[in-house]
Length: 129
Image (tube, rainbow, N blue to C red; front, side, top):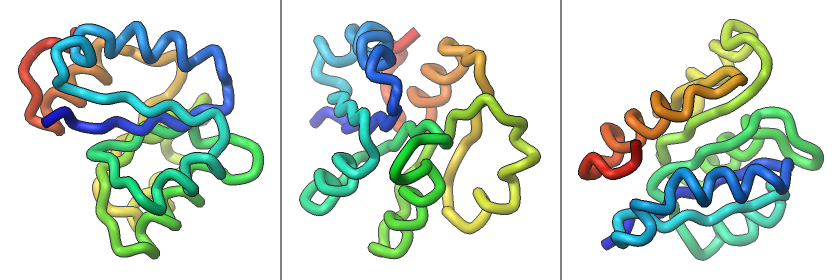
């Protein structure tokens, strides 16, 4: 069964980039990628779905990545979450500790590193990078 990766990023053009990155694994039915350009859409989807991994931008309108993680935790879930931001990680270290399993990546992103960690964290075969 494919692992579901939920990506939340208010920059709509990122959807195309992520779809290209995950295309080999999607074609082999190893992962399924759900992209949300509005955190509120993700929260609505999350009411009836549970992803295996969340990859979320930190700074977004309406609801930031940490508010999403807080909502998930309040609902009793512990889902590995990757936070992405242009800010320095030290600004968020204390906040992230309360959300359970997570990783932080600063922009510009090293997609090879991220894909390698996703393979490792979700126990996927080496098909992402």
